Image 1 (cartoon, rainbow, N blue to C red):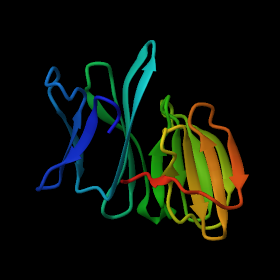
Image 2 (cartoon, rainbow, N blue to C red; image 1 turned 30 degrees about the vertical axis):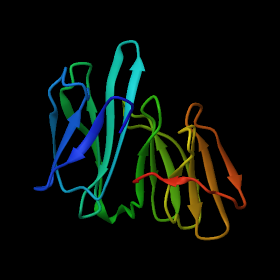
Image 3 (cartoon, rainbow, N blue to C red; image 1 turned 180 degrees about the vertical axis):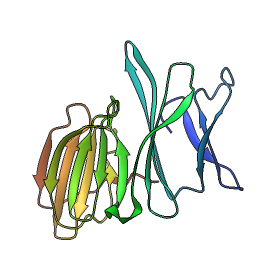
Image 4 (cartoon, rainbow, N blue to C red; image 1 turned 90 degrees about the vertical axis):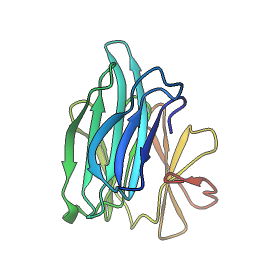
Length: 168
């Protein structure tokens, strides 16, 4: 859920983007069934309004979708299932973070070009701070990377990552 918008999965596994929860806009179908992880972020930059959606399907493939201001949803890119994808998150502004087996990669959400990559130990699961400003990526050894959602800057923290899971 992103403020007044949401991604949902119905009982048959169909995914829909609800661009407005007040009924003013129709829900839009997303061409993916029964994802195991979903993440949604609103883009508000003038000339680049809409949503960025990041989903991981049941086979472990990552899918990135964009919607425009009138909520036409189209797939932008995908990651192979054998890439070791652990999580796929979207930061405000559409920057995508892909946590792979032993690396963290940031991609531009519009062009899908890699911004940076960091080698890390195995990630145990992403967690967001309560205010949504920080994304922590705990690793299997006493700490993790913390990404500032607004700036994309990263820092290493040794312990104390008491954030909520991003798929909750």
